[in-house]
Image (tube, rainbow, N blue to C red; front, side, top):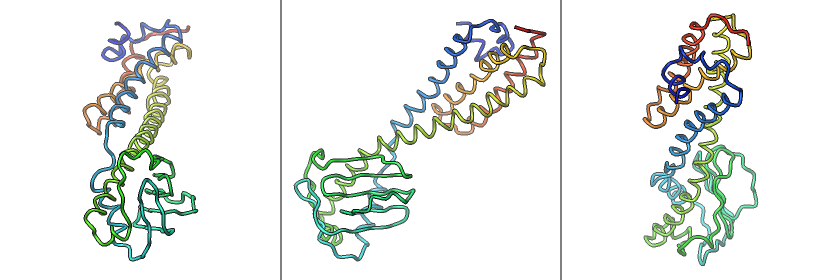
Length: 259
């Protein structure tokens, strides 16, 4: 298709599209944006953010605490004392009535029948114990005493909690990455290109200029796509400047367009 070929490979010919309807321009914007956002989604939602080292960190936070408690998990129910375990940036609040999220790190609320997980002030997991396939019975006293069975069950319990929370964390990462891509697109591929276009060619009507600028900026999404797929982070910085080169190529090949 001519549009796709010129937008990605022949910026000097993008001026041929100066009569395109705004809906056509918007259509191609959606196509290229979806290309980048689709790649981000595939990466972010297929990444395992919590691993065995995170499980070890949580388990050791409980093991090393010197507080004696009678906390017990059995038959998909948690009972016992109110307790707080802290190991920056981790907090484990057991049967706590304090629901204030005041830590940007990982907060695990272990309630009687559910566990909520927060990261960076956002809830990323809400797990009902009744949904856990196995009854991983344990006591915190047994975990601290390194009882092999109870330690294993506690690890399996935490592993399940983090496994379910991974999806919420991935959604949080995807939203953050998408907003960053849009922000940088607006700054570097729209505003900067718009300003630069006037220095390159000032004899073009604003309506036409806007359409051509959007076409020139779409290469940004293509480079972001390859940045994600190839896992080459420095390409994202290349994406900031290539639209300017495309702009120069497009507008330097146009003599004068008023409408």
